[in-house]
Length: 303
Ligand code: CIZ
Ligand code: SF4
Image (cartoon, rainbow, N blue to C red; front, side):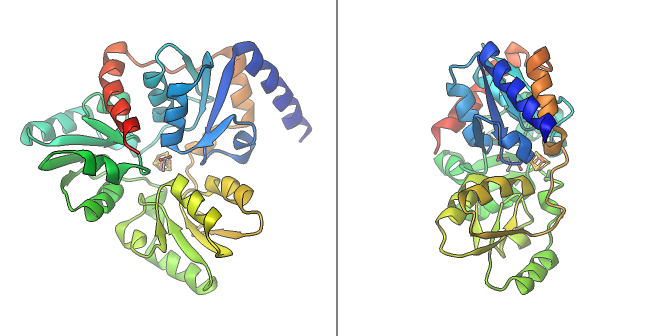
């Protein structure tokens, strides 16, 4: 506690010295969310990065999120607390594979979930997040859509829009771990609770949801709902904002495995250190960034 207090004091000093802003994803450890200037999901944080007046963005999340910030704010320094915080789903798609698919379907538009590398975004017509995926697909005038990398979100979006989609076989190790059996057990234990679920979960689990949505829309739903109890089907870091918004409601995560180990690689100590040393910094080759920027900026237009 004492050490954390000292770290927080040091962080405040450094933030002023560097004119830095701290952005934290809802899946980060509480000790990081507590000190962030903004908390958000990948859509809100990308938006914030694009708009900020700060000189330095400290992005507490996983690597692709820092990259997106750098692409949208190329003249700013983007720091991340630990460069080992990656996203296994983002690594499930590669440029060669995507190019092959594009060659097979020359008229298809490529829609890429923001959980992807800058190189993949550079091969993309438009990016999306889970917050605007359905609207992005509906905004496109295309017979066929190539969707990378999340098969679960892809399936959900296809069901919602009825579009013809060619769906890549990637998935999130964390969300995909949740099973129908887990949810049935929780529903038996908490019969009064509503089950809120993120569309990165398996389709059969998503189908059990009383509410399906992105992290931000789950937060909004729980805040406004009259229900007192919720079973939550997304990453456990979300509990920080859920409990902050509704201290008198109960939130039960659907299993204890809904923890993204990559998101938890960051901690307060590393956050302070990166601002102290000004590294690690995110670098995206300008040629890649320029191509990727178009697809990200299109994403930000669709709400
Ligand atoms: O990384 C994830 O699982 C999510 C849902 C990110 C985001 O904020 O959309
Ligand atoms: Fe990637 Fe899943 Fe972790 Fe999100 S929760 S960063 S999709 S591994």
